[in-house]
Amino acid sequence: MSRGYRVGVIPGDGTGPEVVREGLKVLEAVREGFDVELVAFDLGAERYLRTGEVLPDEDLETMRGLDAIFLGAVGDPRVRPGILERELLLRIRFELDQYVNLRPVVRYPGVRTLVPSHAEGDVNFVVVRENSEGLYTGAGGFHRKGTPHEVAVQESINTRRGVERIVRYAFELARAPGRRGKVTLVHKTNVLTFAGDLYQRVVDEVAREYPAVETDYVHVDAACIYFLDQPSRFDVIVTDNMFGDIITDLGAMIQGGMGIAAGGNINPEGVSMFEPIGGTAPDHTGKDTINPLAAIGAMGMLLEEIGERAAASRVDAGIRFACSKLHSMRAGEMGYTTSEVGDLVVEGATAS
Image 1 (cartoon, rainbow, N blue to C red):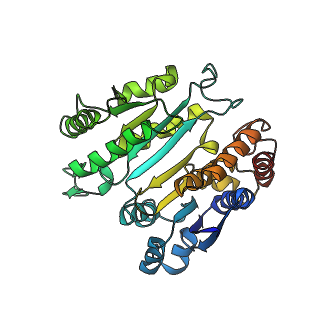
Image 2 (cartoon, helix red, strand yellow):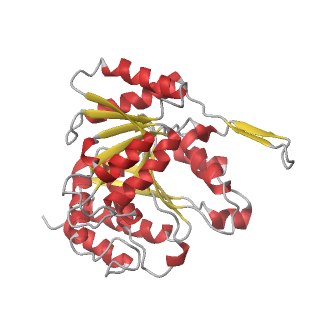
């Protein structure tokens, strides 16, 4: 009997529908031995501008019954910053307890990057970012707002439970096939002496349960240097919400740019959501010039998470084939249209 999955699809705004289209094209090409029912959601700027709704409760309840969610991109200059980000993206993450933000940072052979001197294989690590706590909880407020004496307070909330589960996820990942058995904590323990102390103590305690996994610590500012100068020192990085948000963008630039950077918001026991980490790219909307490889990579991550590893491996092979053909990872400079890049991935994924 064929295996079956229900996958939610949020095309979103800007170029989101274009890259989602290519991700679904690749899904259909690599799907073998299992069925996928796609559940479409009309969510994003257009829905908000049309109805005033961001994420209706009934849509959220439907998501709870899915096996995974595939997201394109959300954002529009007509919508005030923060509305879609907090009331749609962050609400999904928090309500579905997607406490792991997973960002593979891999440079495919032949891809030009910010640091061309990196040897092949140097850029191959994954960032495990805590995705539900820290500064992103929205704790804090204003005092005397709008006056010369205004005070703005933004609090970083870190719980023992939240830190321990993300650290354990990182250690388990370090033992997975293809990883090198090393976990590096990236933080700022010399200044953030409370949150940093909690993270370091938890890493030290959990490490005793994983004697085969090497541990390391790097200040976040030093990590930015090592990303550029010595990326091979990293295997699995574990870090908090804010630092992870920042360093993964730098990670994208040393793997070839936003056009190839995929990410997942993971609940290991529930529903996870996968997306390209770039934005909506309004300048490229409707032109068939955006790079879809990040979205296709996100589809590969989705397949891996639901247990369809053979299909995920075919997606990876297709991306590698496409990378060998593209002139650049930059939108409009690839030498191929968006749909043609998707076709290249399909060709590479189905070649064997």
